[in-house]
Length: 312
Length: 110
Image (cartoon, rainbow over all chains, first blue to last red):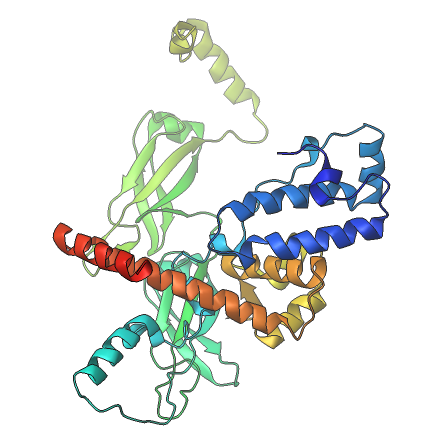
C-alpha cells in the first residue's frame, strides 16, 4: 500500500480541491466494489482511494496532513461493508429481477433455459403466451408488545391501498421472525397470482421479563427478613400472578424456577420462568435493623469472601 | 434488525431525508412498511450507501441510476444461480463431477 495519498489519487501536491475531487471521482467509477461484484481485489483498492480522498478531499485535514500533524494511516476508514457483502445472504433476492415476485419458486432463468431448450430439442412445440407474472411480495414491519408475543394476539395492518388485513400473531413468536400471508401482497400481472405479504415482527422489550430461548427471566426483589426466614410471595408471569415459595436463607443471585411458566414450545410444552432473587434493603435503615445487625456481627464467623482471598 | 427513516438518515453520512424519500419513491430502495412509516434492514441500508456513492461521489445522474442498479441486480442474480448450480454439481458423485468439469473445459477452450 502506498502511504502517500497524493500518489494514490495520482495528483501532485499542488493540486486544487477541484482537481482532487475529479481524480477521486474518476477512480471511484473505475474501482467501486459494487460495480465489480465478481472481483474481490477491488474492495481493498477502493478502500485505499477512499482513505486518500477522506484526507485530501477535506481542506482542513489536508492542511494538517501537509503540515505533518496527521499521517495517512491514522485516518484510514474502518472496514466498510459494501452492498455486495449482503447479497449472498438469505432474503437478498428481493432486489434481483423477479426476486420478490416469486419467479424463483418456479424456475430460474438458468434452468428454464436448460429445460426449455431440451423441450424444443425433443420436438416439443414452443408455446406462445401472453405475459403473466406473480405479484410482488410486500414487506411489513410490525412491532408488538412482549405480552402479545408471549400469549399470541391479533393485529391489523394497513396495506398501501388502504385496506386492512388481520395478522394473527402466534404465541411464542420470536423477535425478528417473519410471517408470510399467502396472496396478501401486490396484485398479479395478467393471470398471475398475487404476491405474499411478508411481516417481520419486532418484539418490544418488557420492563420486568426478558426472554432467554423458551425461558423467561426476571428479577425478584425480596426484603432481608424474607430472605432469612423464607416467605410466600406473589410473582407475575405471562399467565398472571403466581404464589411462589421463597426458601429460608436465600442469597442474592439465587435462581428459582417456576416450571412451565415460560414461552410455549410447539403445541405441547412450555419453557420455564427463571426467578433471580435480589435482596433489597429499605431506603432508610432504621435503628432496629441496625441493632439486629450489630448483635449478629458481634458473634458471627461467616466469611463470604474467603474464596476471593484464596484467588490471588 | 430494522431501522426507521430518522435513524437511517442519522447513520448514513451525507444522506438527507429528501434523498431517502425520493429513492424509495423511485423504487431504488424498497423498505418494509411500518405502522408509522418505512423500516429499513441492513440490505436496504447497504443499498442506500451504494446510492450515496453513485449519486454524490460519482455524480451519476438520476436517469442513469436505474440502468446501473438493474445491471448490478442482474449480476447478483447470475452469481446466485451459479452458486446454486455449483452446489448441485458438488452434490453429484465424483465421476459425474469430473465429466462435467472436463466437458466445461472443452467448451471454454475449444
